[in-house]
Every structure is written in C-alpha cells, then in structure tokens.
Image (tube, rainbow, N blue to C red; front, side, top):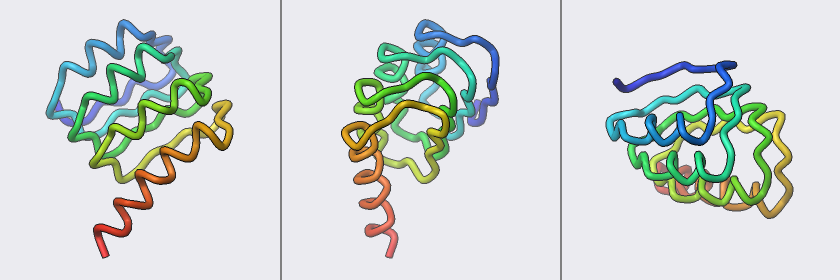
Length: 103
C-alpha cells in the first residue's frame, strides 16, 4: 500500500506503529486523530514518505521534532496543532533543504 487516508478515526500511537511497518507508504492522511509523541517516532521511520497530513492531532514542539527525520517529504500539513517556533523550525528546515536540492 502506498497511500492511506485514515482521517478522523481516533487512531493512536499504537496504530501509527502499524502504519510505520509499511515502508512503501508515500502518502498518509491522518488528520483529526490522536497521534502523539510515540506515534510520531514510529512514523518518522517511513523514509519514503512524500505527503503527510497530521492536521488537528494535538501535536506540539515535542512531537514535531520527529518530522525532521522524514528526508523525502514534499508536502507536510500541520494545521490545528500547537507548534511553536521550536517545533516548526525543523519542519521548515527539512522542507527548505528539499526545495534547494530540487533547484
């Protein structure tokens, strides 16, 4: 499976651990779930991830640090979370480096 849309399903960290076992996954839409720090740690190991939506998952700076490990990410949606500068900076840096390498 390469694409999975599981929005508004009350998914938890345990569910994220199962999704992370699909290395061919390129697109995950997980808006309005309950993914936390442990779930983010699992998802950060899906190295082929290109598109990830985590809108409204109550993510903060602690959870966002895992996103910097997604080396291939092209689209990242984090609306409705509680990210401050500390959490948003690694996400921005990763996406910025992808933009620069594609020029």
